[in-house]
Amino acid sequence: MLTSRTVLDRPVPAGTSPRRLRALLLVAVSGALLMQAPAARALDAFVRTPVPVTAEKSYRSARDALRAGVREYNAGDKEGAARALEYAAGQGHALALWKLGRMYAEGDGVPHDDLKAFEFFSRIADASTDDAGDSQNAAVTGSAFTALGSYFLDGIKGTYVRPNPERAYDMFNYAASYYGDPNAQYNLARLYLDGNGVEADPRQAARWFNLAAEKGHHPAQALLGDMLVNGAGGLPQQRVKGLVWLSLARDGVQSRKDDWIVALYDKNWAAASPDDRSEAQTQLQTVGSIKRRN
View (cartoon, rainbow, N blue to C red):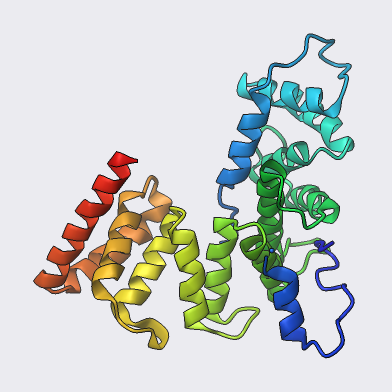
């Protein structure tokens, strides 16, 4: 079991290099956390099941407490939600641990406390069994490892969680490879792009950006597009494909925190030739028609 504290504590097969071991363990497996959409969808799907009629404060099971907690959260009673979720989390329910981690990470109805968030996410990681077959728990577990990677990357000031880019790499690599978490794939690509916690490798960066981009991750689409337009890091230039990715990223911008995506699009689009812009627009129309049919 790969955990937040014992990332590579498995026996080393005879004749296996450390790099190869890492690949075997993890394949099959900025400071602020991105919204973990797959885990959020898993939580939504779980709580659609009606809560059994029972005393609100004497839950029959962790599942009942979780459903009640999410219902109270959605009704605006976040204090009551936290109490119910704490009950479910105390029974080890992964979705409750994840929701509480998110609440403490964002100061959402509870005092902002990154260390508490880290420890809730760590409990999910420590209980993981490398079984991605359960899509609901897989999404939550992948999201937890991604969150831990973000904390290891920057550390938590005044706590035992120190900046550790190498451990951040392990967390992101595990979540990206084993669980296919798009936020982890994006963050892993950033590490490869910057040479942070791992040797710089633009081709690996582009590979991971591409995996996240195909799942609709707009920052990944923007950075992949910029790399392809400019042939960054020795990559072959693919100007039209890069402009298409940049356009898709720009179309997905929903808040001011993503203004950098618009700026990156504007810079590359202005520098492109009329022929490249025309071909990119044609390809975008094809993409749009496919989406409408689906």
